[in-house]
Image: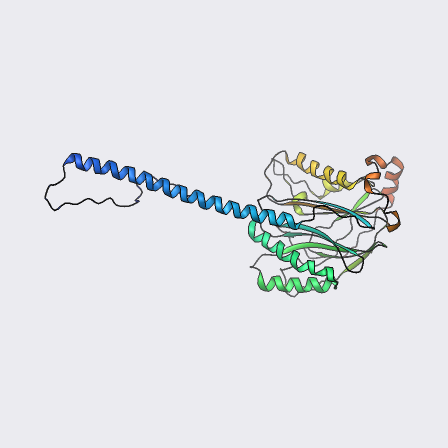
Length: 337
C-alpha cells in the first residue's frame, strides 16, 4: 500500500470565466477548500481500491492454502505392514514442504517427504507439480526412472535456483525398503530404542543438476523399526537467541522412544521444537512424517496398544549395543529454504 503524503499531486480542479477578475479572494479560498476535499476523497477512494485488491489476493492465497492442505494425507489409512502419521506447518500461508503416503499396485506402500527451495506461492506450485508427477507411480513404475524424469523436467521448466530435496521410500510386507535420497536430511531410524541417521546415501536434489542420475538403495527393516522423516524446519528451528534446534537435539529426543505410539512421538517432537523456539518467528516450513514397519501378521496389534513407557533399563542398554549400521556412502546435498 502506498501512503499519499501532503503535497503529492493527485489532480487538477479547474475553474474559468470569460470575465476578467471574475473571482474574488473569497472565491479562491472556496476553490482551495473544494480542492482539499476532493483530494481527500480521491485519496480515500484509492485506499479503498487497494484494500479490495489486498483482500482479493488474500482470498486467492487462502484458496491456494486450502488446496495445498487438501492434497496432504489427512486420515491415514491402515496398512497391513506399516503405521504412519504426519504433520505440516507452513511458515507462510502456503509452503514448500509436502509429504505423501500411497499404496502401489503391487501391494507395496510408498511414502515421501519433500522440501522445495524458497517460500510462498512459487514453492507451493512446485510441490503440487512434484505430487502430480509422483502420484502416477500408483500405476507401477521404477522409482529411479521416475526421479530421473522429474529431475530433467524440473531443470527444463522451473525457474533457475528452484529445486527440491526429497526422500522417497517403498516398503513391502516383508520389510524390504527401497529408497532414494535426493539431497534430503537423512531420516532417523529408531531400532530397539537407538536412533541413527541410516539413510545418508543419495544424490543431488531434483531440479538442480540436469545430468544427475538417481538409483534406489535397499535396506531390510525389522518389525518395530520406526523411520522419522523431517524437513529442515525441525532441525533449523531457532530460539530468540538465533540458536538452532539441531540434529543432535533431535537424535537425543528420539533415542529411547521404543515402540512409542506414533501420534505421541510426533507430539513429543513438535512440543520440543515449540518449547525450544519460545515463540520466536520461524523462517521455514516444518514437516514431520513418521513410519513404523510392523510384520503383516501382527497387523491386529496397533501402535496405540503399546504404552509410551515400554522401554526399560534393559532395553536401553541393549539399544546402545545394537544400533543399526548406517548406509554409508557420501552424497551431494543442497540446503533448501
